[in-house]
Length: 519
Image (cartoon, rainbow, N blue to C red; front, side):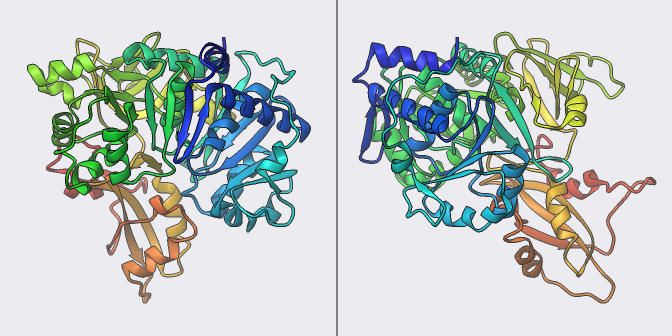
């Protein structure tokens, strides 16, 4: 069974039910299925063969959902691009994926057109909601004349469904390849923790290039629900939808929840009569923020912990666990929950042996939702996927009930507003500044984003540069969310005898009053 076969079931079972709502646009299940079929046929007509990669660069919109579905049906492998990255970063990902077709939307068409000459493997360029530049085709023209019937392609569970890129510790992103079997497994696993029902509305406001947001949309389609899609997150618009648009299920990263609570003055005065559950994840949440959100929205909450390499989710803190925490076990609000069905967790101590209950070590995950591997990265696969276990790089502990508590990171990754930032990538740019002799990047607590990127810089002898100079140099070379929010200057970075920067020493002043080493 494949995810799009469940979507097809509901297209037959409830053809007139709403499927995608976006502003004034509303597509029924029958109409969405017809458009997905046309996308599949257009891909085939463009010469895309099964397993070939096709890139898409768009903010949330119906076409992005339909492109995913059409690719699944045609056997093509969509590669969603983070629209917050800089053009050189898109260029690397599209080139690394060997993408043969690229779809972009709106103002992003002109942005990606600037690096088009560096992408000779891309044979076809498709523009949504924009005047196509020379060499591009309009989305509607691309679909024109294509049949609304199922394409003649056989797709198997073992075939690749999509390829999402994660920032790499070496500064180069890696493409996590998710098979159809892993995709469907994670949908069913998450539904066991907190189901979605046919006819409900699911708010899609987190970006669909993100693993968690994509999974939220996919499980809505697999259950006969309607996707209420907003192009981008705006706190007032999200709160208005939760209150007035019959939303039953919403995925919000902690920074979004915090923004809704502090940026919408009447958020607590409103009522949310249809809101049944808010799913949160992608970064830890402050306990006070979570308690306030539960009070204001008066619905169930579910936390999901995972990573792109686990499709999306590996553990879940269920509604029942949240209620228990509020009743008499407040420590559970600091937990990421238990392993979801068919998933195993293991904590590996520093000596490579299984850790005792309560002992902190690296979190390992095994289950049917694991990625097939990183695209063209055999060394990274050998390091991350050992004996069937995904080595997450997170440091955590398991209590005697199986609840996972994330304490820190084995690696240096920063999670800012739900986005992964690897310090090495930012450091590589900082070190290219002519005035910079040495640099380190750390994450520090931030009330809005969870963590903020801080650069710590050592200037060359006789050189001068301000914090604004440093940040300005990085702008355009890195996605906006990777830019340092602040810059400190030191005479020298602390290092151990082997020369490794002691980032724990740099982090300690900012984290000493925190209950754990991630925010």
